[in-house]
Image (cartoon, rainbow, N blue to C red):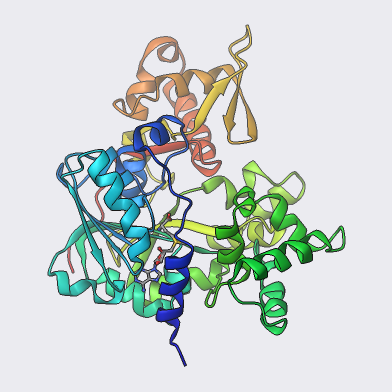
Length: 406
Ligand SMILES: C[S@@+](CC[C@H](N)C(=O)[O-])C[C@H]1O[C@@H](n2cnc3c(N)ncnc32)[C@H](O)[C@@H]1O
């Protein structure tokens, strides 16, 4: 019988993923951005500061464009893309030639064999890949082994809570004898259209716009191999591999403040952090993917508002967050995707000063803030910046370096 890797390779040869873009400059200008791109989200990867200016980056399972996109956005980095599918790599080659990306190297192969390149990387990116392996832990271990001691991994694997409508249908389609042919894709579309109105797969389909493309129908419903994780399963998986969880890349989906109303909100806030994430996951059933950063064990730089280190953090707005609807009294609305947060005039003031260069302490010493008692200011800033972190609208640099060793 054909093994899983061969089936996965065949799928991504027949249906290269994602639907490729033609021009990287146009794609970058259209916004959004890849959470694993250090030029956009570097402080989430290395809150202690980027380890060196000329990064070595591995994009494992790079698909049709991700390695080219990261090479384009990070011209001083050396980027290596690896993928099973030559069809996907073909599009990356097209983008490499079109944009003269001399810093991009592409290899066809299995990421489990990445050690044979004899290279170590500052950043290992692998999004949407490990959950398609027969043994995802084996893939994770191979990536860990090529990560430098101060390196960061930006990973994405499926979340079970948000995909709970998908798996019974995958099973149903297998029983119906569907393959990955265009005729089978048409049967899947008919089946989805005929689902009862309150079926959980309908919710999934409604919030997954890429399902208009056949590639995404195959990737979601006709995939030969996929596995999804709950928050506790994911944290276990990372730690079993000798890695340490550093942060989610979309905090607003894990901490309760952005989503959950009172009185449930305050009950969840009383829990240890990891339980808060698990409870929010169960509450919203929103997490179809988990995007996160992992480091070698003992090397994660953790954001923490206990003690006084946070006064030396250098905050800046997370890419994609906007300050809108400023009122005459200085209050405003923060917008992240389709979520809106009201901010007071004082919170708006600290956010305007959050330029990534000044520490929180320096922000509090400047301008209108200097007129207030220091203790009151620090209490306000601690509450405000921890909320901004938890609702996923800021990132920080200047976080103390993790312990050296290993
Ligand atoms: C869903 S796509 C994701 C592409 C890209 N990472 C992105 O986020 O746009 C998964 C890709 O991983 C590749 N892949 C799956 N298993 C792999 C393996 N064991 N080694 C290398 N590539 C693999 C597939 O060929 C496919 O191109």
